[in-house]
Length: 427
Image (cartoon, rainbow, N blue to C red; front, side, top):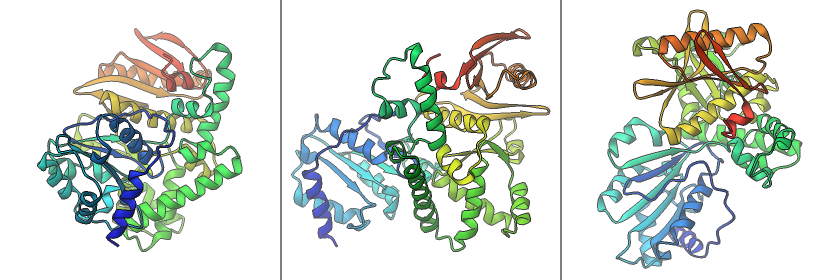
């Protein structure tokens, strides 16, 4: 088994890099450990390879090593890896060794190993994994001051267009029809690379099915040793089908019991934490001035991918789909702009997204499919204006399907922008 490390590392020496599409994050070499986290099959491995290719322009080949611990041929053992590495490679001592370690969370005591390597001062370390534990407070504490992390999600609409149509570099007015067609495809089938690259709709759905089952069985059932996986699967499918909706454990528990799915609240909460850890869902808290009150308020649930949710539910709700797409894009932008995101709920109104930087609310975003409907428009703008006054924020945006403009309401300006323009940063 130990010799398999030699085989894998010899393959790396001969490795020919494929064509790799740059992503919305591009981590740089650092004195800190750099972690890239995100769900399975979003391109973490390709991003590591993209970084390795760039770094090989500055470092000797023997000083750069890539290893995927998800490779079934190798043991999840750091000692044997290093033993084989130093037998095969002859790194130059005047340069540090750059390690790219994929699916690191599969190695026992990986955080301890990373801390030891980092303390030796002779390595630059990039890691990738599909567990949010790589983001957790415990890890940030145990690697205190030595660790930066980046969240990699399925492809953004901008990245999707780069794959689909390389001619759309500069958007011209006559391209709008083509962009809207692509946007509908992006919403319906999502942003997982292998689904985007498949042209046939039937095959796209087959890939979504395989993807869902792989995430569920490999990243949830196997990782957390779930025995009653049928109930866990039912819960996950209900959650993914109710994207962009508010949930509480009590209500969800009552709904499951009424549907004949008997599950204790404690078990239900544990399952939800597993789903979050595997990046299949996200729970968005409500903005409130009281942390204690925040725990009691409902959370909004968002899916990792609208393609997966539509495949499971079969129900199209344009407004909720748009909101989920906007949420994922906000998470991508948060990687560069470093803000916190919440929703806002107060009495008779709600605001979809509150972006907060430090102590200040920097932006309020409402998502509305059909703003031309008078009652809908009144409800959405009323929510923005009320929240604007309460949270002392003047940057108000309403993302629509196809309406664009600006309106002054009660002394506050609201900007209306179509979804495609906002996703492409054409503001």
